[in-house]
Length: 127
Image 1 (tube, rainbow, N blue to C red):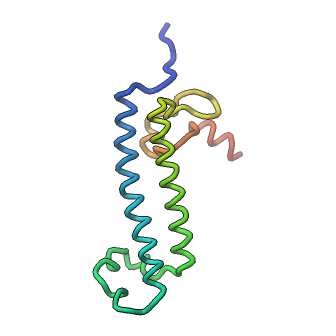
Image 2: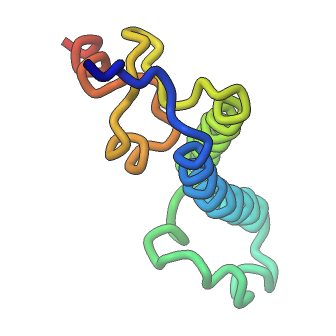
Image 3: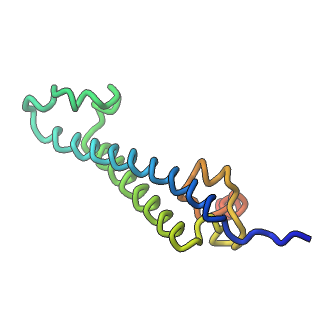
């Protein structure tokens, strides 16, 4: 009888690390753009029409400073979760459900690489 895996292999952890690093790079870029947007909302100088400001989708350009601030906060939290996931990879505890102690499915981790709960544990907590 095959023993149930208690952790992901180093090769599997490396795959997840690459996914997380890509998401982290994008998240930091998005966060920097949000902070830039907040600064540009402070004044009505020529910065408002600069090409870098056009990077935003049209909808994002009309967000209020408060909405942009909330988005920036969420993005910052997301970055912290991704960094914590990288630490779990280094500790070889990544992908282990903090409730059941069993492995979180690879599909879930690919979709939500900072997940600390399996789908079952997450659903049980939301009922």
